[in-house]
Amino acid sequence: MDVNQHYAALLGLGDEWTVTNVALDVPGKRVDVYVEYAQKSAICPVCGELAGLHDRLEERSWRHLDTMQFVTEIHARTPPCVVSEARRQGHRAAMGVKGFSVHAAFRGVRR
View 1 (spheres, rainbow, N blue to C red):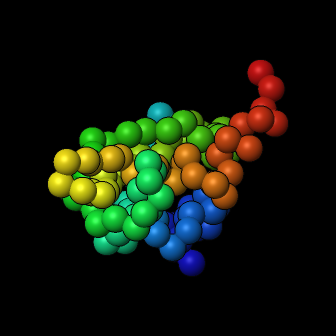
View 2 (view 1 turned 90 degrees about the horizontal axis):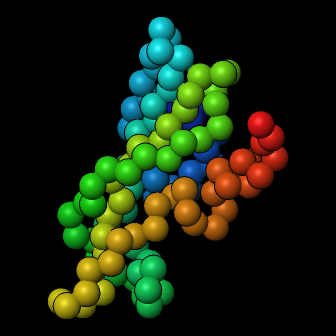
View 3 (view 1 turned 30 degrees about the vertical axis):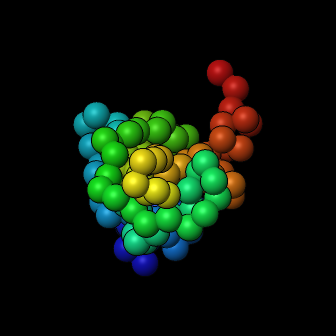
């Protein structure tokens, strides 16, 4: 298992998302995980219909739980799906869909 597969398994990503790069900055105590949507269609977040994808939105970043006390951020350009000529909706990123454990993991963290 390579580092990309390792982080995909740790993040609990489904088959529709792929970890494309893991950048480790030891002096900066930081891990950046880059994730890409790997499918040609997606469920529309508005109407629930299967829709084709169009382009990619700007990259967004999500702070994840630290990896061995290294700040960990996930980066992704989410794909907008086109449900009609007049509407273009942003697809929900892995970090906001059912089954992704980031939010559940943060609930147990206390400062």
